[in-house]
Amino acid sequence: MPKALVVYYSRTGHTEAMAGKIAAVLREEGLETDLKRVEETPVDILPDYDAVVLGSPVYYGTMAWPLKKFLDESVRFHRKLAGRVGGAFASSMNVGGGNETAVMDILKALLIHGMVVQGEPGTDHFGPVAINAPDERALEACAAHARVIARLTGKLRG
Image 1 (cartoon, rainbow, N blue to C red):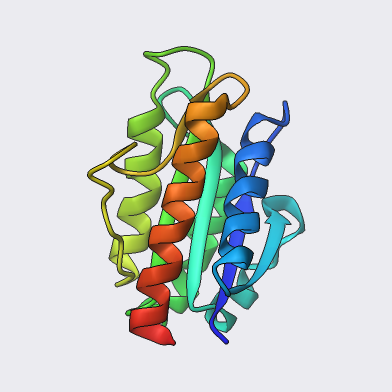
Image 2: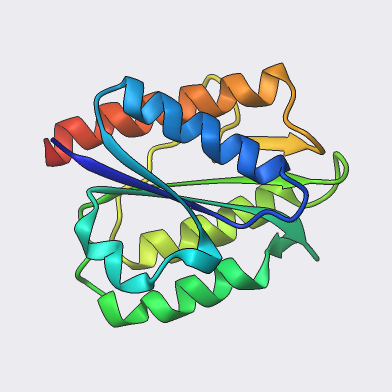
């Protein structure tokens, strides 16, 4: 059975709620899924997973430092994560809060690792975003993102 990892940083619980929704739907879709706070996640476990989804609140237009640190430490696995599936999500305080730039920064790191990222034409194109606490729209975008990741993981790694 393919394995997925959802790693997130959250101070207010908003990003955590999104991570929980993504992990729940990945499980419903048949992936063995671990949900972890970034502070409690050793980077050494990354090669154990077929899909990795990362989430962060937005700070100054990009991801929070604990998630950036995690990605910086993942350099030891350069080329070893190629072909695995990746995804990203973010939450911010307001509409112009930088959600898309934060998601794109996370995706850039995953792409440099050689991971496969699929866009979403029907909802949040680069990955789910929320303004403050995730509302029904944001949670549905999280579910849609998880379904896309599960299907792609099944095709590539199943």
